[in-house]
Image (cartoon, rainbow, N blue to C red; front, side, top):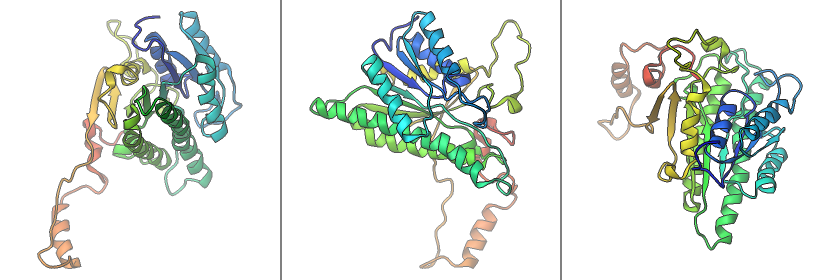
Length: 318
């Protein structure tokens, strides 16, 4: 199909029946990987509607038709047992599991004061628990492989999907923003835990025009000078291919923002101001003097400095 930097490797891509996941699965196959294409296949972006095997099967068939190797998996990654079965399918079909791309997700948008318990739980379940489930089974496989080989490092790559919503907040998406922030914490913890086994774990925050974002970005406009849509999912896929490759050996526990021909590396939080008491302990009055003065002139609507990340203001981030 193309380059062979991932020849002999097997990748699982969740939520790969459409949009970003589809583009990522096609890119990994182009780079030579065998791909397990997972998608639960529900038509609604909120996870509603009857599940269908068709989206995953169509993408797998597309990869095979182009000369690659792929198998479809129709299952719910947020279900612990089905996630285990998905990891097992990679091993049974292709004999290895080397790359995990966690992409599956849904939306249940609502302001925090109107959100139902079910809307909160559903989004946390699919995004955060789904990422954990797949990470857990891939990690156990890689640890067991390393132990079986006298502790020699194996090849393992995890690429998780977060969002700028975790950085900048998203007023109508408290469940989504919380899940995406949790995914970053899961990724950095996993990176620290699995590094000694040869596994590299990173996270991307993509902007792309998909059915998840059609009310934010709208439909693609007319092509100008035959230029591709800058928000096409295909702009995100190459970074996923790179992070899944041997070339990313020294990249671990990192957060990337990616879209439209741009990749930005997000630094870990740093202290921007430090206040010390002049006495043994702070008093209310001393804190009032220091902090009220420091935040004077700030707009309370801009609650966190990260709202300015990459020029992002109050538009809803993805």
